[in-house]
Length: 175
Image (tube, rainbow, N blue to C red; front, side, top):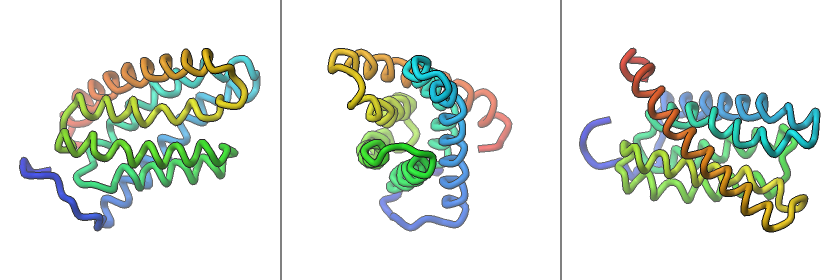
């Protein structure tokens, strides 16, 4: 992206659409693969959520290296929500993914889509959707504790993701 202002256009190029779709699929598969351990043994599910979030920080930060204008994160969130529904996520979780994807847009725009702090904060906000499935099975204090752990895992994942994308991907010229 050039050093100018972020684009306000909602028109996507074919290349941008490919990146959004590919990284939404990778994001969903990585999350599902890690969290699937919890589906086999129910008590393991809550602890696997922060692990999936921390690991998926790499995928999300890689995605953000491709974002150049408003709407790309929302489209990413819609695709992740649809893939989640196909994988058995409840409708409130899918709705929360989309809402938080929309909420992330102004954070990224404020950082001109290239600010590391805004990228990490946006991932932390986006990751809160993973608390939604637990709203009907956990008591409020446990939901608060889980949300705190999710935010911490997302911050770690965001830092990990920015470090990996900067060192490995950007320097190799892949992004």
